[in-house]
Amino acid sequence: MYCVDQCDQLLRMISQSIYVNSTENSSSVGAHIRHILDRYQSFFNGIPEGVINYDARKQDKSIESNLEAANFALSSLSRRIEALDLAENLGRGVTVCESVHHERPSVSIPSTVDRELMELVNHSIHHLAIIALLVKPFGFIVGSDFGKAPSTIVYERS
Image 1 (cartoon, rainbow, N blue to C red):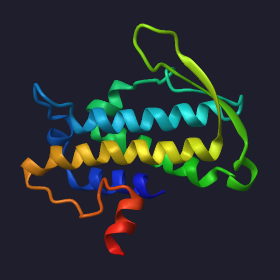
Image 2 (tube, helix red, strand yellow):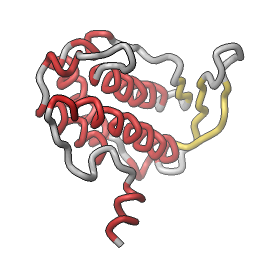
Image 3 (cartoon, helix red, strand yellow):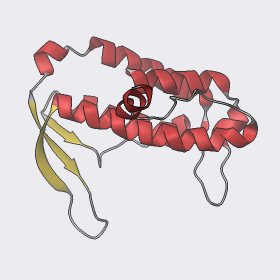
């Protein structure tokens, strides 16, 4: 999956100190990677029961603070994506639960496995774009397509 490959590319480039670096005005690369991985984990945890609860994220701080743990979690995610039987799951209905306002109860809506995969990709790309900005001051230049929506890349190339 394109965005997971970009996460892998990034984690291979940076050091532990850059991974955890944060400022008063921004989260660390690690916080963004952990958030991306949390949502995928919620997705995979919810498929068997048909209920994906994005509020029930593990929020594993070791992934946020440890580059090695993040690499391990990303490898695990890659294996889960490869093992996902898309033919069996495309169009399969699921219920998605998530908070959309901090003072209101979470919302549950119908969706499909493939729609949620699309949203995970788009959500990941959004965070990868932020990550690209976070590593730039350290002299890291990511590719011009890094953190960019596939539709934008297609548009720019046409």
